[in-house]
Image 1: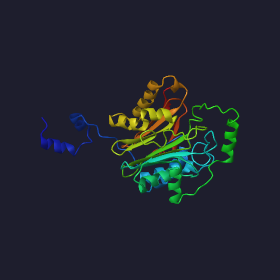
Image 2 (image 1 turned 180 degrees about the horizontal axis):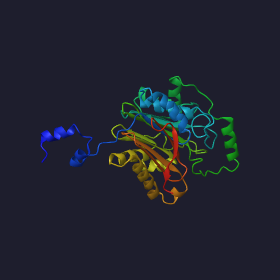
Image 3 (image 1 turned 30 degrees about the vertical axis):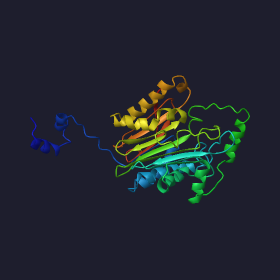
Image 4 (image 1 turned 45 degrees about the vertical axis):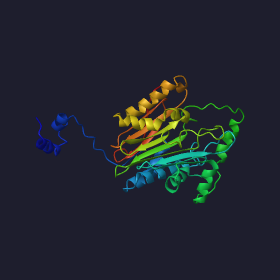
Length: 321
């Protein structure tokens, strides 16, 4: 029989195997913090910027904002920020959200003329009593807070749009037009989590369409007790299952980040068995211990990881199909 005194003595040796066997408890793995993970190949540049902050004992929130701003400001990236492909009427509209370790969050949608919607989303979080601003209201708020009004439609994206107008067929292709988002989550040295997600949305979408990217719980969710998750792909299907929140709740139930991502994708397949074969959705998750996982409907979903052990490397996620 284990007395209270013996229990306290054993508690000082909690790392020893006999103790874990006796009390049925396995301590979480000791991992090296910080770590940042983000979706797609352009996550490498985002991670690089985020790591500058994380490696200097910075806050995860600052890191994910700085990281998301990299693809937002790159005119060569046609699915995020400046240079994003427009809707079917030729208007570039941006969606973004951000969430910190205290469950504070901010978001903007259908925002035009502003290169860095993730930073506007952070201002919404920090300077208003609201979570979500859209359209003209979001633009006015951005301009009132010092953001510059700029032209987002580049010559290259305009050329692609005009070519599309010749047929005007809206048929997204997995990993091409569905490759439309950067989601980024990070764990800092204080073991706090934050995340951000930003996009120009589906190319040639209907005017006013908003996907999952700015929706807290769909494209992004952070629970500082458990972990964080983000998504990419056809946002309508992520919204239907409140995907990132589902991933985090699955981790709360004891699933690893990998298992949680897989179960969320399986939920989409169950809901849309035929449609799921033609579209792409991917999830990326990071738990409080620094373990991460990724899974997608189709092959081709890549993500980038930066930690002390993994110096900004690209991986391809496993897939259902």
